[in-house]
Every structure is written in C-alpha cells, then in structure tokens.
Image 1 (cartoon, rainbow, N blue to C red):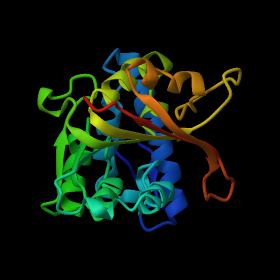
Image 2: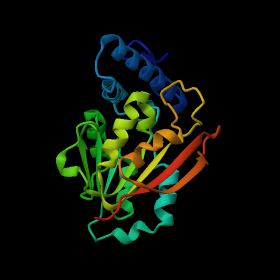
Image 3: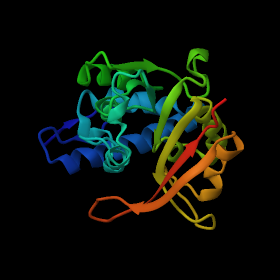
Length: 246
C-alpha cells in the first residue's frame, strides 16, 4: 500500500507514472476547491500543488519531461538559432519546471522564465542551471516594470486556459505588454468553438478570446489548428502575433 499524502490521499510511491499523475490531478482539484471555500486568491493553489509534489515531476498534471513538441517545431522552422550572440531576449510565461525555457535557450535566446509559484521556480532553477536562463517569481497581474516591452519573443503555453474566463482578457493584455517593438508573441492553448461549453480547468479557449491580443495592439501573423501527440489527440490552437516596430 502507498503512503498517505499531505491531504490524506493515497500516495503510490514507486507506482506507475499514470498513478502519480492521477493523484496530482486529484490534489489539484482539491486544492482549487479549498481556495474557493476559504476565499483565498484563486492562483494560490498552484504553489500549493508544486509544494505537495515534493520533487516528483509526474505529480504535476501539466508537466512534461521535454518541451512542448510544437514549440520545438516552431523554433526550428524559423531558424531562431541565428539569435545566438546577438542578445535577443525571450520570456517564458508561467515557466513551471523550465522545460520550455530551456528549449528557448537552446534556440539562442537569453531567457527569462517566471512563475507565480516560488516552489516551481526553485525547482526550475535546480533542473536548469545555466547562465542563459534567469528564473524569477512574478505575478502576471503585477509584472516588473523593467520587463514591459522588453522581449523579442514572448512564449505563452497553457496559462490562459488554466484561468477562470474573467481573468483571460486582463492576463492577455499583461502578456502582450511584454512584447518589444518588432517582437513576436507565440501562444499555444487547447482550442474550442465559442458555442461549446467548458468545464475545467483546463478551459480551452476560442478564437474570440484570443482576439484580446489584437485589442492590445498586436497584429496576427499566423493561426494554426493542430492536435497533440497523445493517445487521445486534443484540439489545440497556435497563434503568432507581432508588435509594430516603433
């Protein structure tokens, strides 16, 4: 029998990865409900989940052992390796354990990864020790002034879909504020039609919600619908935006 986790859930230490991921999903659901019941900040549950994971990557439901495959494809298609040595900067929004930040660094960018969870940032620092990546704790709704308009590439994957709908537009505006003049924003999310009902998280986004980036002054460059590589492929959107050079 496994040991009991901090909230009384059965903890299958030494069990199969999918058992651990199921436990993490249950923990996430419980932590979100507790935050709601206690009237705390909705986003407090993220740090609590990383803390409960205690270094077990598989416990984090959205964690991957490698960067999202579509990010690697996108970078390779544009030969971003030419960025090496020219000081181009990228930021990974909601960096989690730092996998995507590492992918951006390998493409030649000087990378900042930030997350609201101090436990996630500490974990990312441990796993991705390199001078080319800086990890910081930051709130998307209270970004450091020094970051505004400061990044040639802004990468956003799966953060907006984790938020209640009322947070999506203001969060999108905050993300857009990070893009430097002439810079690019890359967004990846689960996708849906506007009429489809949602129950989550995750809460797939419709194209109308993505239009918040255009309202923030960014120009759409590319839109692609694709399916992930899971056993039961899930619909996704990739959207690329550009900010006019000043």
